[in-house]
Image (cartoon, rainbow, N blue to C red; front, top):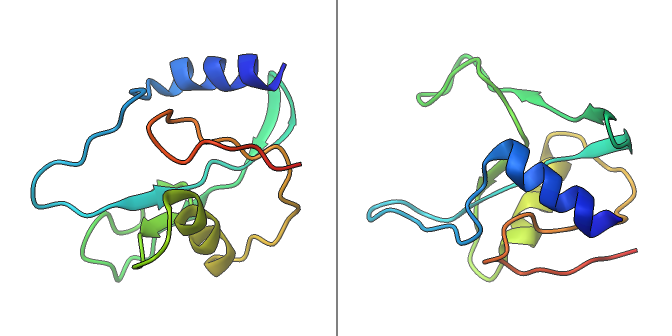
Length: 105
């Protein structure tokens, strides 16, 4: 069931299965936090500060640049915690198959 839902979300978000990083760009991790049941999810979103140079005031998923020694999942979780998310970590999935794919219950 969880794998089917992840596949459905990949299709809805139009995620490529093998992400690539363009030259001159750095790795960044993003966490899509869903709460609820299929077709009735609540989503955790952030609003970027108006003081930022890039994308000020935009609505976004929590995320940011990868620190040395982190994998993408660790980056995404750290970034979400930095903006105030401290919920339970269950049924974590990497929607991009090219990353560190694991499930934690």
